[in-house]
Each structure stands twice: as structure tokens, then as C-alpha cells.
Image 1 (tube, rainbow, N blue to C red):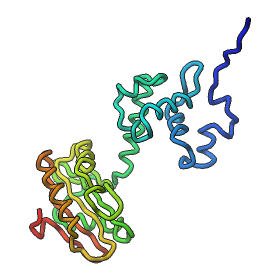
Image 2 (image 1 turned 90 degrees about the horizontal axis):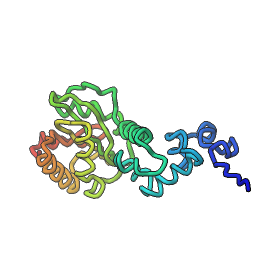
Image 3 (image 1 turned 60 degrees about the horizontal axis):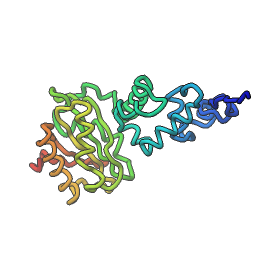
Image 4 (image 1 turned 90 degrees about the vertical axis):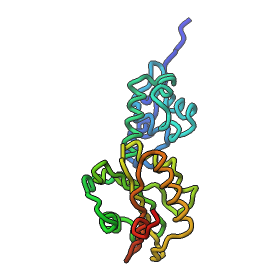
Length: 231
């Protein structure tokens, strides 16, 4: 007896419903995590659609964040994911992590708080919410990157030392400067600002990453923790 074991692939979907065509027509934002993963992976294994492989990844690790934090070895345990595809996934998430770094500040020299204010004011002075920025420096005090750690009113849950220094460690920063804006226009630090800064300085000492300053930036002024003797 002859049985039809025809496999299911992306090409069995109507053309308009295939991830690549949907992305081109609607934009990347319209795609599900499963569809985005399918595009990264490119193709499935024999007899199995890449959409099935993508769904298997999501089922194993919970969501896109879980997949991004998985090791190469963990990714490679999933059926349909070998070392090559695991490497593709890791590379993709690393690029996404780097997108918030601002390459135009490469080799920018930090000599005083005014330099930091000059570097950041245009990007955060008019923000309606507080943006907490992490400035990464090398051993020569040159800026090697800037990233946004959090958006919203600063508190200890929003700005956790683990998340802050994970970024610094992954980019081999020798020291860091923190900066955030006060939309109110008042540059004086709040109690939360003081508490968070103290925690971050202590965490930096343990990790061997010096916190050089924390600067509060407003539309017309700034407050430097270093200048005020608070660091």
C-alpha cells in the first residue's frame, strides 16, 4: 500500500502568508516571534517546516528573551538546530543588543561632566520620561559605547546592578558613567537617585569597574555626583 508522506514546508503556505512576504508587505513589527525566528533560520530539516523548528525553540525557552539568553549548547539540543543555526541565532541577538550603542561617539574623550552633558543632552533633554544611560569607557577614558538601561521613573527595580554591569562586562568596559534626565527641569537628585547611585558604586567596586560619575541632565543645567562629593 502506498502512503503519501508529503512533508510540510514554508512553500506549502499561500505566498502572501509566508514570513518573508509578510515582512516585506507589513514590516518586521507585524511578524510573530515564530516568523522572525523562521526567517533567521532560513530552512527547516528534511520533512519539517522551519516554522516547526521555530516553534520548538519558543516552546523550549519560553520566549524570545529566553532564546537570547540560551547558550550555544542549549540551543543545539533542540531538534533542527545544529551548531551553525545556533551560531546564527546568537549572532542575531548580539546585533540586536548592540543597536542601542551609539557608534558616532567612538573615541570621544571624557575630561569633565560638561563633556558628558554635551554628548547626551540633545538626545534626552526633551524626553517626557526619565532615560537612564550607561556610558562605557575603556582604560584610556575614551567612550566606547552608550546604551539605555531603563526608561521611566528611576527606582531600584528598574535599575538593577546586575543588568547595568552585565552590559559593561560584555563590552569590556574599564569604567562607567551614569546619566539620566529630569523632565521636571530640577537637577537635584531624589532619594531614589542617591540610593541607586550608592548601590551601583558599591557593585562596581566588587566587580572592579569604577563608577566615575552620575550626572543628572535637565534642559538648562546638570548635577554631577562627582563634583558634589557624592561619589
